Image: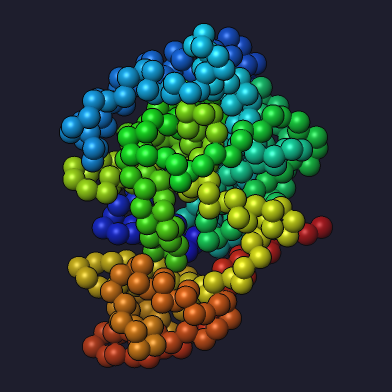
Length: 391
């Protein structure tokens, strides 16, 4: 749940809770200048060697394959012609990356874990200033401001938020005509493929990383992605950052820094990205109505961590459904109805497969020395948010 997004650590403390949503990048406000107009060639040359030394010999396939060289990193098919021109247009890419700053409502439920003032990266993906970012930046946002690569600020509004993917959309309220970054195909990413993690700070806020795994990601805030993208080495500017492939398309949106980005040994730290393919089926509905058209999933308002083969409640959202029903911190979730659950993935699959928001959910829990059956009246996640300020 968003209210406990970072204080609790899912799956063996794999997710690292940051001190703030984002490390402070270089100050914006300067003109694009020569550095920002440079081809990404110089950046990639500098970073490929460093990233390869960290990841190249440690990822799953690296023990038998050499690290990608410069030509591999850029991609032989990414040239406009045979002259060697790189396909990634640095000026267009950085021109489409913006700083997203939000102020949440004064009594927002998410303020305790996310703070009231939040900032991260957004990427222009559509006409008239449609910007894609990570959803926790805009949850309960009362005010939104977007700053472009030249330091010019624009008022903006929240267009949509999707708890299922964790993605959000904002849009400037004044004309903002910037060429968008095209959506790529995240399903085509391969292990050890080099990618750029691009933040709103431009070249100094960009890092080269490698895809080290694509797998299911579960977290204790009632959240699961069927196939998240994990990269390494880690970067500090992950919140909303654009994951860019060799074609110059966006293939993911930065969500978290994690201790274990690799699926197997050795364990490497890195970042988790929401794949862009998760956005494509719901994008039109999000633009039109502010949400996906599917029936909302039931939300219980509890955080449950896997600890030594048990699913233990680490937090209960105040005044949420589970809290109202009597679920307590420290309870062990044994089953949904009569179906035993032992992991976050099992819990979510059984919770979501046959129910929807508003349904009564029966939980069997071990509470102290007693086994109790507790009936929780589920809600839509967004119904827990505080209303925005009205004038």
